[in-house]
Length: 184
Image (cartoon, rainbow, N blue to C red; front, side):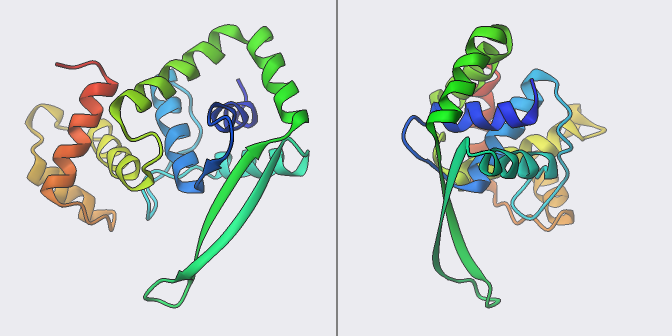
C-alpha cells in the first residue's frame, strides 16, 4: 500500500477530524514498524519522522482527498509559532478509502489492527504519549544490545538524539509497547 493511501486510511479512521500532524506521523510510524514498511523514518525532535509521510499528507491535500485546517495557538520559548493541524477526509477521499477496503483488504485490515492496538493502549489521540512511545521504540529497535538495555540506558540514548525523556515517561511508553506487542 502506498504512503498516500496509508495516510488517507489513518485519517479516515478518526471518522470526523484527525487532530495533529505529530500524531499522524507517529501512528504511521507504528504502522510502518508493525507491517515491515520502509517509510524513511529518521530521528527528529518529536521522535521518528518521515518526509515520505509529510509528502503523502501534501499529496492528499493537493488532490482534494483531505482538508487541512491550521490553528496557531501561541509561540514557543524560541519565538516560533505553535500550530495544530486538523484533517478530515473529503467525499473524494472517502471514495478512495472505499476502493482501498475492497481492493487492498489484507493491507487495510493490518492497518486497522495496528490502529486498534494503539486505541487499546489508550493513547490514540495523545500526541505526547505516542511521541514518547515512538521514541522509546525507535531506541529499542535500533539498539545493538537489546538484552541489556535498561530504562537508564534508554534515557541516555534519548539524550543523544536531543530527546528529554524521564523515567516515568519511559515506563509509561514501555507499558504502551507491551500492550501493542501483546506482551504480558
